[in-house]
Length: 284
Image (tube, rainbow, N blue to C red; front, side, top):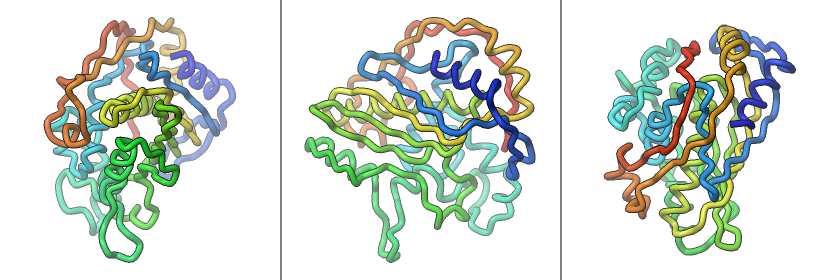
């Protein structure tokens, strides 16, 4: 929580204004932020200075793990986070690759679970490779679960923000390095924090290793101009509560479990105290 608030304060005090072409808004921006989440000691990075909808963040992560490319599938899991980008993004609505209502195109998990081979001969399931190797105790430094495919950007509704996850196994402990090109700090970042933490916890559980730390690199961290007042004058004035604890169903034991029967009922949070919600504007 302190890491998050320190980043918010840094943006407010030292950020520079940047015009964002996609949204048509200005962003108060800093470059480079490094956050660390201690999964080993169950320090769940859930924001307490406003209510954070952690279930939706985990539902979105499950959709990425399953390779979903349709907003309806995400809604069925428990999140509406892709509704706007799939159905209200004007550029995507006019894109010939869009297959219809709720279609997201080739984005996020749809890329990572079906990464197109350069020679056109098929696809690679990047996540399956990583899970299989980790279960055998193999740390393959060349394997990265990535959603980033510049050659396919025109085939999806949104370029990936939190785009790459690199797992490392060291002396029986599993670590995660995640890279994010761009972060909407008031709205999206806490979801990304939750997802990095939960992804490491899940991968350690299904591969039979102890979880260590998740390292989260953010390149461009920003606050939109219509979010600044709420962040500066409301959220940053509040005192944070103690961190809660994430509980994951121990019966989740494989990637197949995550792909088939796991739901939000398999996750719970203990001891979550929070300040009232803040309705930050969302930019499509």
